Every structure is written in C-alpha cells, then in structure tokens.
Length: 423
Ligand code: AMP
Image (cartoon, rainbow, N blue to C red; front, side, top):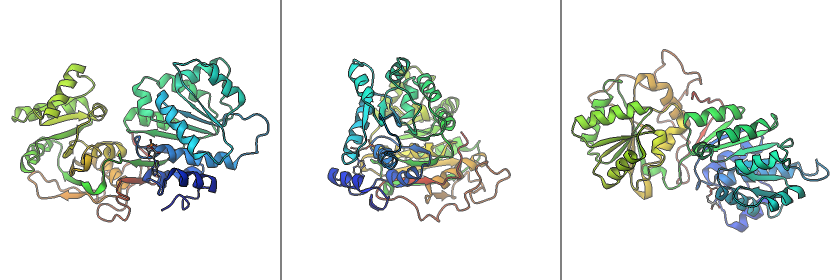
C-alpha cells in the first residue's frame, strides 16, 4: 500500500516523497482513511510507530479542503496538546515537513520561555496550534487564545499527560472546546484512567493499536492456557518448570494479585518480586535491578508499574490475568521479543475472563495457540457460547481464521467500529 492509496492529496504526496517515506506504517494505514472521513480515533501507539504523521497528514488535508471558507484573519482550527516541550517541537517539525506545499500555518507554545514571541505568532493568526497544557491555559486566561473555532482536537501521549499530573489542566482546556469537533486521542497504554478520559472525549471512535516497531510479529509466539482461577498458581509453577523459563515478566491486573503471585512463587523456592504503585521507589528499584541482574527470575507487575521496565531481550511474558482492555494485551506482549530475539507471550484465561479474551482475539485477529495438553486444563474455549455475553457483542470468529495478521514486519491491529471498551 502506498500513501496515494490512502487518498492523500498531491501536495502531501510530494512532501512525503521528498522526505523519503515510501510506505505508510501500520498506524498510518489504519488511521488516515477514517480520519479523512471525520471520525474520532483512539490510537494506542508509542513514539516510533509513525503516529505523528498518522494524525498530522489527515489534519493538513482536512484543513486544506476547508480553506477559503473563513475570510479574514486565520483562527485556530486545530489544537494539538502534547505533554512536553520536546514533543510539541517534534510534532511541529513534522507539520512543517508535511505542509511544505500547502498554505497552512501553525505555531508552537510551551512554558519555560518568554511568551512574547509566542503571542506575536498567535496575533498573526494560525490554523494549527501545538501546545503544552500549562502555557496554553496561561495564554487563554490572558485572552490571547480562543478555542471557539476548533474543529480538530488532538491529545497526544495522553498517558504521559496523566503521569505528569496534567489531568486538571486538560479538563479545563476540554471545557472550552466546541462540542462539535473531531477528536484524536493517542496513548501508549490503555490503562483504566486513560480509557475513562478517552470515553469522555471521543464519539464512536475508530480504535487502532500498534506495538512498538522494535517488536516484529514473527518473533512473538502467543499461547493461551484455559485454566480455573484456583489452578493458575499451580499452572504458573508448572509452566516455568516445563518451559524452563527463568526470566519472565508476569502481569496481573491488581496490586494485590501481584503480591500474591510473587509470594506463592517465593514459597515454592522461585526467586520472584512484585512491583506496583504501593511499593516504595527503593523497593521498586531493587526489584528491577535484581531482575536485570537475573538474581530475580520472575518479576510480577501491574500494567502501570510495568511501564518503567525496560529490559532487553525479554524472552517471555505471562499474562497471569487477562487484561480487561484489549489494547493492554498488545502493549504487554510488546515487551517480549525485543531487539530481534524470539519472544513468547503466554496467557492464562479462566472462564470469567473469556469476554476479555474474546475482545483480544477480535482486536488482534491473531492465531493464538491453545495449549490443551496440561495438567490443569479446563474445558472452556473462546468459541463456546457463554452464559452471559459481554456488552460489546461477540467476535464470531476466533483463532485460526485470520487473514489480517501481522503485516509489514510490525504488529498492527484494527478494531472494528462496533467494539466498545469495557474499562
Ligand atoms: P513518530 O512515531 O511519529 O514519532 O515517528 C517516528 C519516526 O518515523 C519519525 O522520525 C518519522 O519521521 C518517521 N516516519 C513516520 N512515518 C514514516 C513512514 N511512513 N516511513 C518512514 N518513516 C516514517
């Protein structure tokens, strides 16, 4: 697929050609067409996936198509919020490259520097404003910025925004945005607090999730074990033993669950530690160091705590509990098979988790091997009708029927419009 196939206009194609992009990345392929149609988007993607172009290109095209409709001084029609000055500048750099052959203006505002030049730029009139939350609010309060004409709102790296404590600032900005607008929401994770914010902002969004580029599809094997809740701890010990796994990140949904798994393993003589938000910084650092040094073999983590873990060549991840939000699964398994090494993602699914598991199968459209031959096998399956159907409706097809698997050496998923998160 080429950028032309995505129906981008010639001035953008010429600019992309000059920069040397030959093929759209998975997130670009999946995001650009619905964004050009005016849809909202929830994009679960990190930096490095090409997400900036995924939103910047459609924004430029949409603004270009409406050019001339507003006589007089330019007013801000697109607001891009970024957590840091560095990211804001990077986004602006992308807009600059892509808009080379278009008559669209933009400016960047961020704190820590004098506002004089930023105000001058704003007074000249811009189509696109790229801003960090603090300075944006400051200049709004001083009356230099009005958001009445905003047609497109982008929230980039929403997870970092929340980590950095910007939630109140973001809410103040959102309150000033017109209700009638297109919203593009990007986050590296789909943790519950992120989903909550996304749900307040987005209307019937297209959902797109891609894993970091460093992980290639062919390098991650995925398996699921169906097992009862009580047998999960036994199965974990057995899998660690039989698969000879001595360096693994185990995911749980809760802090309490993480502690319990680590305790059970320790009791069985397996060197394990849990990391989560209730642990002190010191305890977390010690656990991480131990895991890196391989004196700790199993690190048990909640999704939020796992964000800071950057361990090369992680051979295995185990989903001791299935995440409620399907994109979290994609993010978890993105931690394995790093740097060209083989990775295996193993999931333990109990009956109560089947709705979540089905959501994952639907999102990933992947062949995931079902391991049937194990001591704690439960007679359940993602194909079997369940007593209570999940709210989002069921994926009719399950494993093994995919024609939309890993593509282009990167993992890319597209969740159909009908999918609603349960977070
Ligand atoms: P991002 O994830 O937006 O930070 O992009 C990561 C890097 O990939 C940036 O340096 C982009 O310029 C580059 N990039 C984005 N899209 C493409 C593409 N289709 N082909 C090649 N490079 C790209």
